Every structure is written in C-alpha cells, then in structure tokens.
Length: 179
Image (cartoon, helix red, strand yellow):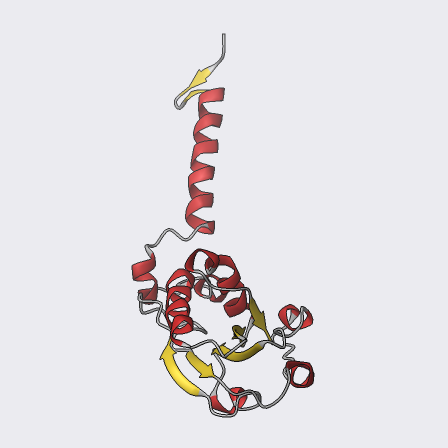
C-alpha cells in the first residue's frame, strides 16, 4: 500500500507537479495574449516580426494584381528583407502569387528574377533603394497588419516598377544586403 500524506499519494503529488509544470511552461514560453492586444504589450522582437503576415500578403496580392504585366513579360515580386520574401512564398500561393525574390541574406543568393520579369512589385524598400533598380517607382500602398503592432513591416511601402534601370543580371550584384 502506497504511503499517503496531507497532499495524497506520492504518485498523485508527482502528477500534480507535472501538470503545474506544464501549465507554467505554456504561460512562460507561448504567446497567450490575443494578437489584437499585442500592441498593448511588450512583445519580444522576433515574435512581433511574425505578426500580420497573412494580412500583409493579402495586401501584396492586391497590389500585384494592379500592375499590368509587360508585353511578353512578367511581374516579379521583390522583397527588401527575407521576412517579406518568405511570407510571400509561405502565404502567397493560395492568393495566386508567384515565387518571391529578395535582396536580403540567403534570398539574394537564390538569384535574380528571370530576364522576362521587366516589371516589379517591390516590398519594403525606401525610395532611394528602389530607385537603384527602377526608373520611375510609383508608391501603390503601405502594409498594415490591422492590429496596430509596430514591427519592421508595419507601414512598409509597396512600389510598382514598370521600367528597370537595366537587366537583372547586371543589377543583381549591386542589390545584395547582408546583415
């Protein structure tokens, strides 16, 4: 017969401890605040950077559909950072978006858009950056996560570019951003 004390049997106490430990781990490690209230909290940077991607990609898709494809060519999507490009690749397929290209970190190493991509929807570049590859960039929208959380993409500009400054093979080496 198992010994019992004021808190029950030893196995019962161990079970309670395991449950309490699991609950404590969830509260400490998982974001349990509703996304709609994150703007009122102190959110860890990397967690905050994951908020709003489905909404952002929906806005990117709407802007992409407004850019007329060039005769015999295509429209590329170009992100200024790997998060933007990755979000398009993760969420954009169901919205009819093509693979995204990017100038930041590993995305740059995967290469430029094809030569036929003579128009671009550029995500998150400031005007001086986009002017490095686009003759007449036109601001078409700004991203909004719709929860009021300030992260790197909140308010990021979307640019339509229908005239490149050169061929991708010549532009690409000068667009790499590491860090």
